[in-house]
Image (cartoon, rainbow, N blue to C red; front, side):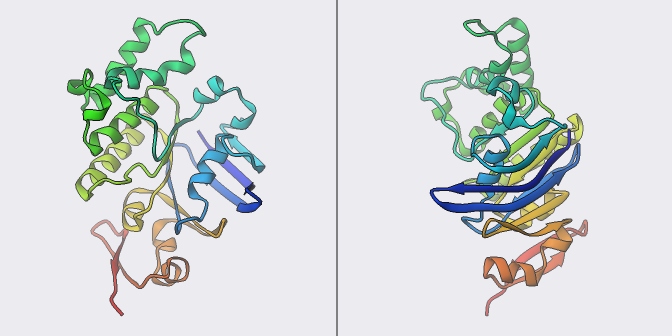
Length: 256
C-alpha cells in the first residue's frame, strides 16, 4: 500500500513539532525516518495514525487513517511504539493474540482462526518455543520480536515501527532488521521506521527522510542523504562516509 503525507504540521504544547512535512512510501518499500533528537520522528508516525492532532493530508492506500475508527484503522496500519506496555505476567502467545483485537467482535472472544494466525506469526519469528513464557522473562531481542509479532498478527500491509532496535546490542539490532526485511520482501509489506543509527538506516532502507527541527531537510536514497556535509550540518558530527560491499553508505566517526 502507498503512504502519502503532504504538508503535515503538528503543534504540541504551543511548539510546532512538525512543519510542512511531506513523505511518500511506495508499496513494498522501506522508508527510514532519521534525524537528531527532538526532530519530530516519533511524532510523525503517531500523527500518521491520528494519535497526534495535525494539519495536512495523509493517505494510506487512498484512505485517511485519521478518519477511521480505531478498529478499522488497525486493520489498515500496524504500529509498534518505541516503548510498548508489556503487561507483567502475560504470556508471549496472549500478547501476540492482542494483534487480532481489531477482528474480534465486541464482548466476543478470539476464534480458532485468530489463534492459528498468532501461532503462525510466532513460528515465523522463531518464537514458537517461547509462546508460554511470561513477557518479563524475555531478553531485549526477544521482546522486540514479540512486539513485532503482535503487529504482524494484525495482518496489515503497512508497518510503522518506532525505533525497533532501541536498547539492543549490535547483534540483536541486525537480527531484528534482517527479520523485518525478510518479512517485507516475503509479504510485500510497506515499512516506515524511525531509526537512530544512521549506518543501519542506510544499510536497510530504500529511502531516507531526514527531519531536522520539524522539517524535511533531505530525502532520497541513502547515498544521497547520508553525505559528510549533510551529517555535519544536522547532527553536528564529523564522519567519514564510505561505500559498503553493496554500495550502501557506511559512516565512521572522525576524530578532530
